[in-house]
Image 1 (cartoon, rainbow, N blue to C red):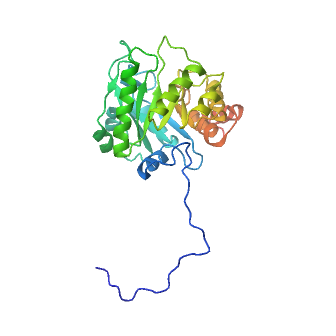
Image 2 (cartoon, rainbow, N blue to C red):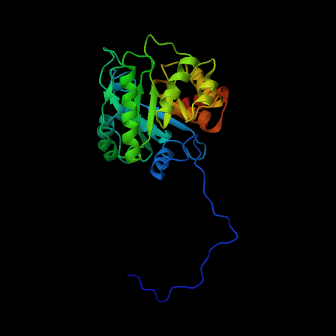
Image 3 (spheres, rainbow, N blue to C red):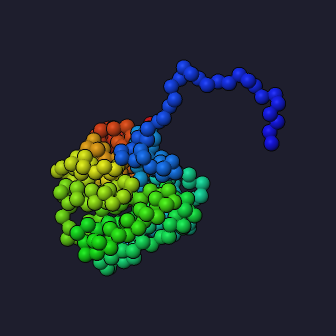
Length: 294
């Protein structure tokens, strides 16, 4: 027991300062438990409420695609520029340095390869392993309109229940199959279903027409998927448009690690996401870094 004698009688209650209770900056998530909010703060920059997620989970259904053949060589050097990393537990355990202290979003669904019907996924990670790996969130594909739509939605709700029990957020990923239309009407439906059924935040695609209606009608944060590789200026333009229309960040993979200068590209994306830098300026910044200009 501490010695009670000798303690000071002069206490500082700061009566002139009103009690503070800082609101959580992410839309729709202020009522979450402290642990959930803390994990989300490892994904979203608290200063901006936005995130640059580096997605390298493609190998869970694809071959080692270009840029991901040697993650230790091509991806690990980029980690310093990412707010969070999205990967599988195999890559996390084998390749990502444990000194990486920013958020990890763990791919938690899987099963079929690109050779099969992708919507027929299962939950592929036990919640206890997610806790053991100290991840900040778990990601699950949801195939609205797919052949196994109900199964994929059920995967998400089971993961949400487990995540709520252990304080781990769930990222609902609105997957789009080859035969599904990719427009604002469809993505409004998909994102709203995920949010209504408990996903903490949503990953979806950017569309040129009506994207602001997707973010406006989704009660939780939305981040955009980077999608297939496009020219660097176009990728920066897409990120800028999405942010200006309500997105809380980007989850970008191929448009970073398949860039001619991946480190320059991710830093340019950060300028767009966190500083609202216009695409033309961000592209110039990318080129300066790429060619070594001061």
